[in-house]
Length: 188
Image (cartoon, rainbow, N blue to C red):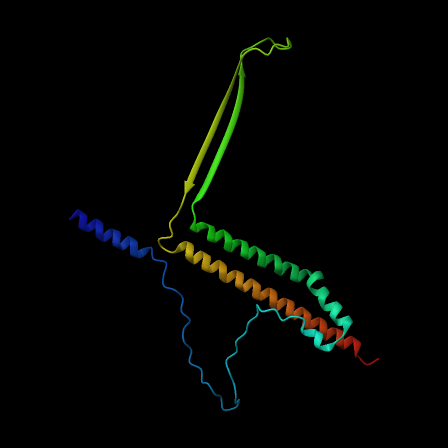
């Protein structure tokens, strides 16, 4: 009887520790054709791709020089780059949880006891040197998927940070080009 109760309790405990199923995007049926818009298709944004020097189609050396300075001089982009690098570091930190942690500590201590009188120049007495070396190893197996879910979350945050960085760069470049052409071709 005790074994049966212990087995049931263990099953209930194991069932309560489940992390949950993988996320699946819910379906949202969308008609393929709207009566107002022929040829409509679903958007497929890709904010992380490099847009390149898109402003070079204008063949304006001043605009080209200004646009290249955006990546170097803009503090908002520097902040977004730092946030992206921090997000990547968090991913690496979370991934390290899959592996054991090893630590080693060493210590050397030297003591002198007894000996000659102070100021007599004597170096008598007994010198004792002790050595100490300690090591620990810890590892948490990812039985319930906690570490895996943390890594997935960190990767998603890093991807969002990369997209934000790319969108901010594109927005700043477009704003610069707009302002440049408004000033250059404004009526006097």
